[in-house]
Amino acid sequence: MTAAAPVMRVVAMGARTSPPRSLWTDAWLRLRRNRMAVVGIGTVIVVAVIAVLAPLVAPYSMNDQYHEKVYYGPVWDTGDWAFILGTDAVGRDELSRLIWGARISLIVGFVPVMIRLILGGLIGITSGYLGGRVDNILMRIADVFYAIPDILFAIIMSAAFRDTWFGQQMGGLLLLFSSLALFGWEGLARLVRGQVLSLKEKEFVEAARALGATPTRIMWRHIVPNTLAPVIVSLAFGIPSAIIGEAGLSFIGLGVRPPTASWGNMLQDGLSSIYSQPTLIAAPAACIAVILLAFTFLGDGLRDALDPRMKQ
Image (cartoon, rainbow, N blue to C red; front, side):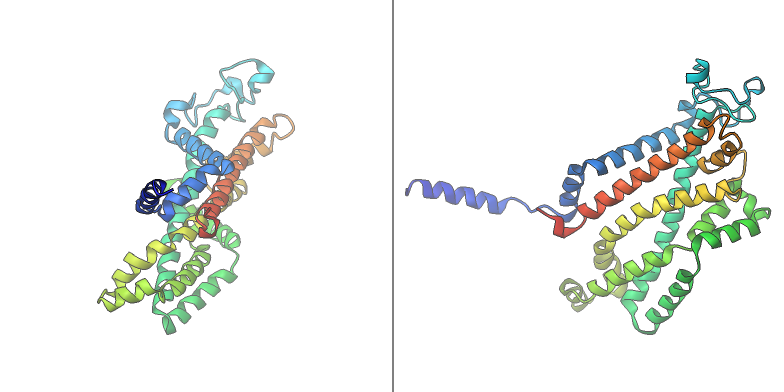
């Protein structure tokens, strides 16, 4: 009995000296155990790699036309592997346009969300930390933006500026980024503001303030890192909403300007042949559905992984 005691003491001391895992390490371990989140991450990575390597992966260029193959059927109808998913109304390869269109859909998914992050994050941090009149003014501005339907504003802005110099830049992408990013930041601003209001009264912030840290240093060194978990989850759910927004605008002819391929305007192009060649509308619709589900699974996994109450 006495001989086993020192061994148990050494084991206990060893257990105490093992370094504790950080929140991010715990979150990564929990995320890896979530099978649907792993599937979502894998799908997003595969689509991103295909989009980046589109010149190498796509069988043809985005706008190569084969007039002798107009409305050519998919391989399971024709047996011709040269056009696996067939061709559209002007003889462009459907599979190649899907691969090139992945670039546009992912860019439109990420860029407006990053703009929302910058705008909403700055407003939320400033409003929550300064409080008082500044907080009241900024939140009333956010209320005004929140009251306007974002998709309606995007339609109005796209229709009004589509034929201007601004609307023609980058194939209409600049106008699309602006119309999708000018609204939607107010929810993120409120989320960040709530986090800042709870964090600025914590003991570590009070200690930093007592040691003479400037407000800017306190915000960026102590408060901002502790608001990242809910912000990351919000971004994961915001990306699919931007993708579906682009698809909707392109479907009604107010998104990316032809002949640039995006999954949204491919839906519009395939609508006229929905009965004669349904592949032209089913293929981009399936791509949109897959990427939306992937980001949804990823967002759910991140929400569970970054919740400290889920720690086991």
